[in-house]
Length: 288
Image 1 (cartoon, rainbow, N blue to C red):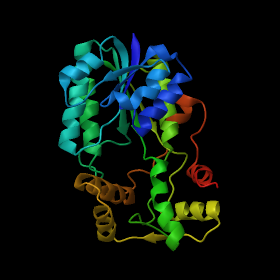
Image 2: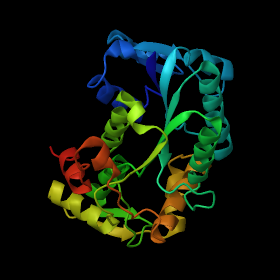
Image 3: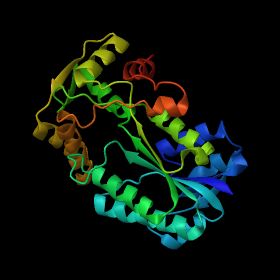
Image 4: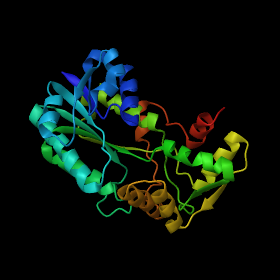
């Protein structure tokens, strides 16, 4: 029986595969992807590449065949679509005889959260619990990697902008979250029906992040607290879909209320070390 990772050609999925290969043999790993040709490099390592699509119950059920544990990585779409897709994935896992679902959720999932994607994760968590299958919920905080998107503009203008005020967010590098997932997938029986809050080492403000960028590059960078409507206008102008603009705008609204500043030790408990700090992540990412 294999361990399967969905969305394995995505940024998080590839990192999970990388960390899992350090823990179990390649021939014990399967992946489900919408475009198998994009996973040729994984197939070359001896990984079982399967065709899957969260919009197709029959296809997903076939992809989950002879799989004991599956990691369902959250898809990218509007709330209604993603809720339906995630439910399809859970239904397929149950139909295929999967024993254990591991799911990438979000810290503090709530139906009424300002970060609108939070409602998706709460629905999926509840649907997984109702399935009766063993499960592990990985409540991931926000990727530190996302902070790098603002660096080029900051270095060009000296301004690092966001509508964050002095809110603190427990950012954590994507590769650390992937390693935590790999730890669970390698020994799922040690994590039956467990929920882990996977956060950074501390909540950081955007003013602190601007300081980290300045320190790493040797260039003057200051934090600019953008008005919400200016931030929304920028996101819309660069072509982001409306549901993503709404979610990102809501993230900062929630953060200002203290929604995402709680630090958990679950990552250290799982992996055996603290996650990389935001300052160290930015320093190493921007090292020339």
